Amino acid sequence: MGFVHEKQIVEHPGKAFCRFIKFESESYKKVAYLEFIDQRVSQPKFSNPGLSLGFTGKLESLFKKLKNKLSCTFLHKNYDWKKDNISRLPGWNFLNFKNTGIKSYYPWLTEYEKHPKRKRSLKAPKHKNTVYKLLKIELDVNKKGLIFYEKLFSQKIKDKTILSCNTELLYKKARSNSYKRVVLACRDLDKFHKVAKKADKINYEGQPAALIKNPAKGWDIVVVER
Image (tube, rainbow, N blue to C red; front, top):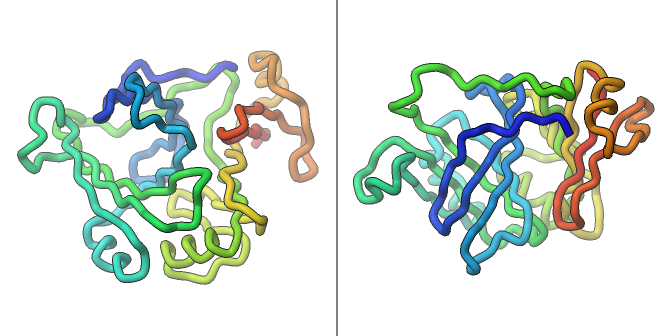
């Protein structure tokens, strides 16, 4: 499809090996990414997709504010957890949620602490298909799903949330909660189709676009020219 997969593979407990497709972003990390997990143990298996939202502040402080509104847990994991999983070293901080009413995917928050071995900012590669940015994430939400996001963002939600990186979370009222699709921007849609030959040609919001249809439990990808 013309995407550059990062050579770096990140391993998490449970023999979960993660690879990434990165894009430009206005976030503090300068990248957004799609993550693909190869889990090499039989149990437990990831059967549903996840939605990780980066947090720019101190996640433990947010946890203290949210724990009375949402059922959530705070977890720290060292970047170098395979060598030292006891000491409190720089790593990822996660805020995981229970009883969200969302069963088809897992939303959580991630804080990335300063990496001691990384001196430069992350940089997205140039993809052969000219895709360069994550524009939108489209979600179907029922009443329980909408209540969860309103509590998470501490605000009433009508149809969308604009994240600090200017990526839009779009909410469509539905009977069930579902992670529908991600919308990516490319610089040249004709070139995208030449490279990603299996992508379908569609119209999206009144303009030509490309659709990469994924398995039933996964999210689809829509690509528009910007």
